[in-house]
Length: 172
Image 1: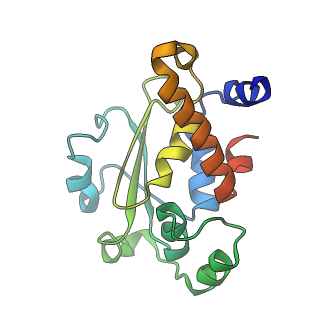
Image 2: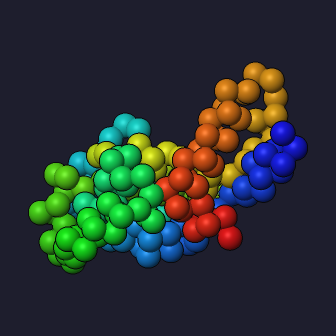
Image 3: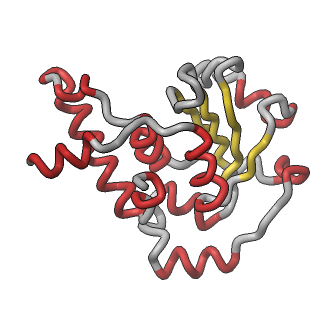
């Protein structure tokens, strides 16, 4: 258990600039200004962070990445992922309205000097929770008995992100 706890405790909160690299390079997202009218309805969602706190907004639209985030593909190292990525098309920021129906919009916010403190996503991509929970980092609060389930969820998030082949992209 000690080794597992050492691993869990090694996750520090990550700055949004570092997460930016993961989203743009690995998850092939497009960065879009939060003021863009095409996503205004998404940013008005009551669960979305306050506009003043939003640091970055991304569109994840490639089929291979969406299937990875939905769990249809298990890992970036899998044959299915490699085959699907070959068929992916690349679009520009100007063309995002054509993919908004099927894309996942990711919103990253900070109340702490650029360190991720909250996030929101619309669309599919349940595995994003695991990724961003690790990016939020380990908290000593998780050691309290009443947060035992949250600690287990954090451990499960580590396993999930590792299975996806993304742990080394987060844990540098």
